[in-house]
Amino acid sequence: MKPMEKFQAVLDWQLKHHSALGYGLVTLLTAGGERVFSAVVFQCPCTATWNLPYGLVFLLVPALVLFLLGYVLSARTWRLLTGCCCRAPRAHSRCCSGLRGVWVCVELTGSALLAPLTWVAVALLGGSFYECAASGSTAMALHLCPSPDSGCAAQLPLVPCRKAEPAEVQDLLLQLRAQSQVAGWVLIAAVIIFLLIFMSVFRCLSPVSFLQLKFWKIYLEEEQKILKGQATEHATELSKENVKCFFERSHPRQLNTPSIKEWQQISSLYTFNPNDPYYSLLHQFVNRKEDSGSIKSSEGVAMIPALGFVDSSGIANAFQL
Image (cartoon, rainbow, N blue to C red; front, side, top):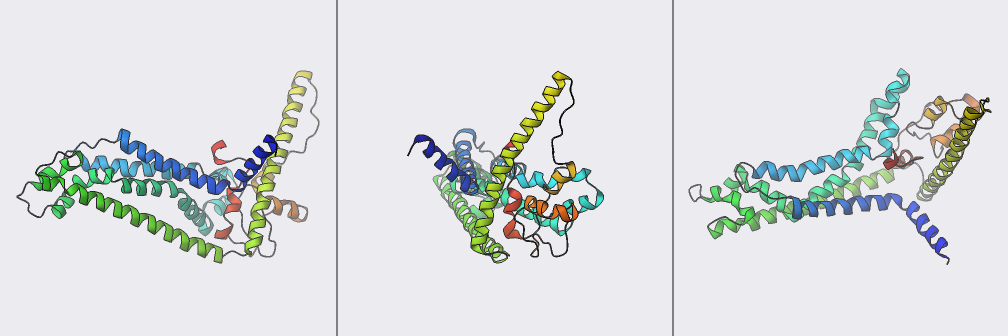
């Protein structure tokens, strides 16, 4: 096999499994980032005043940032929001309110939770953040120190720095680490069980069979590749024509560029209609344009959880948005 053929095979495989690779890369980068923070940046102050807030900040604030980035880097977020406030009142109500909008937000939240939950789970397995936070907690001191007069509570904040005396107090570090790691494994198990249940429910609610679903995803991949190629070609031709007319001071020839309304119709959220099972909004638009010139929702349409991948595909990925 020639080098270019090998490269093309690798590229085709990457495009075919881009979703799984994306989630895997996010997980690995999150886990690696947590390890770097824990080993290089994090330094527990070992004081009763700062241990709890310092540990919680490192445990939860990066998770919050990753959660917000999950929304920002999702193409479906921008598909929902772009132009929503400037549309007609009726269209605005369809895209931003009601059960439809709530369900899209739930799906986006579920996808955005992957990275923050990975961060929290890896951080709990490492134990450093939890040890620092728990050692500065008054409630944890009452739980770990049986006698209030033993000086254990006063020495507990020094445990993460291994400066606590006597040795019995320093040994509490093992209990804190055990608590952190148990919480981490419980979180991982809960997330896996939750994903398994909901993925099973979503597949049970699928209106199409397993093989048709596979075909559907292949169709979307090919449609988006062709759409991007045609859009690039058309944009290049339009820009060349405009530049040429600018310098030659001539009138541009007519190019059939889609109107604002047509772009909006293929950019809204996908709904499934069992009477007209189209594979995308573009597919629906070209088949119904001659009849009504519109693809407005009709009776029987519904947002199916198993078909959420239709909105995730786009002419540009989230990083380019």
